[in-house]
Image (cartoon, rainbow, N blue to C red; front, side, top):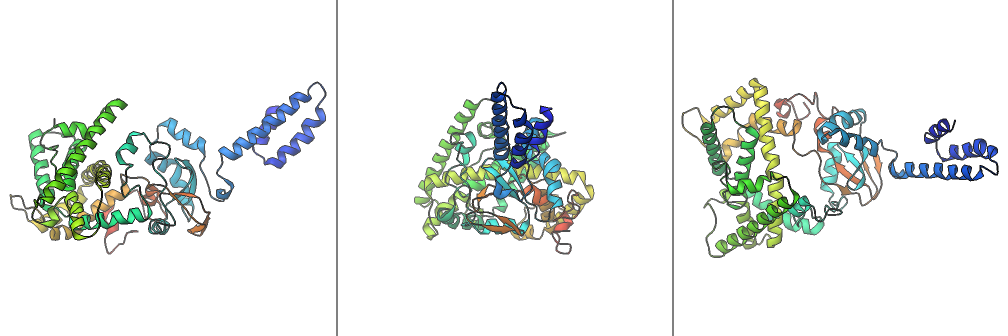
Length: 440
């Protein structure tokens, strides 16, 4: 009987609990079992409070659908990745609602996941209204925090963020090292020929992007493609099982970055401009330091190092993954591969000599660009963006979002929602063509 009562209670609000207690428990109390009855009432009350407080979102968010702690824990126990959970749990909810909003517990408590493109644009553009949550809270000594939680554009907000953007944005606009990327491709093909037979694409892309970010980021050659046993390759791929070793390797890496920054400053102060006479072939570190001379702003050595670490984090593993998936999709769809190859030949020719593309020629490769966009959409390397806090009451897709709410841009949901894309699980580069439009 008691189990039935308890089961019914767990499905009823507080008023029903009180009614249950007064109508069923109190009349049956005797002096001998009164203590047991009172204890039971207290236990039931605690169960209700815990359930209502910890296993449901706060009342101000209960107008939104939610996934609770049990749902998240179940996915963790099953070993589901964010992508697997997105397919099995989140997308059915997102596809069923016009606003694509739901609530789920995360690092910063109960977080509202956002996927509608207009809402995403609103959050990213209204930086003062939606400042970033503090990435450091609760994990100050963690490995990832130690690596990328410094004063870089990913972490900081407000005026500090704007001052760094004034330096970093022009550097990225000026940097277009086509010759460098062409040379890296030549080195990659030469390595593939030496290896022969079946090759590990993922490993090669990791090495290629490591060299790319080293040379394009701050003019340093890790020799990751040419030398499979390169000291830097071993250090930077971080394939070590013990936490202590990870931190020791990271300390070495951060110390090396300090040396690279100081060496670059010394060379520029002596008039040894850069790794290339052409501005667009210069590395990002050079361009950021040169920004001081142009009066565009200045970054301290700590800020430069923090942003170089961010470039590694955001541009190494993510880029190698994107390139690996692009190769996979081209291999899986030979008709798309043939069309992309035909475009490259039409622009660069088919002579048996290397013809490195110029920036203008790359701009003409519209279909290859569509292939990369579709790769990033369907197998994007970043499923979510950093959490932000709503500083005032607002509306997202016509749904009320109260002040103080943590919002999280769910990129995976945006890229796979049936409300945004037609047949989203089909690899179709033409959806990005001018004729078909991005929602094709």
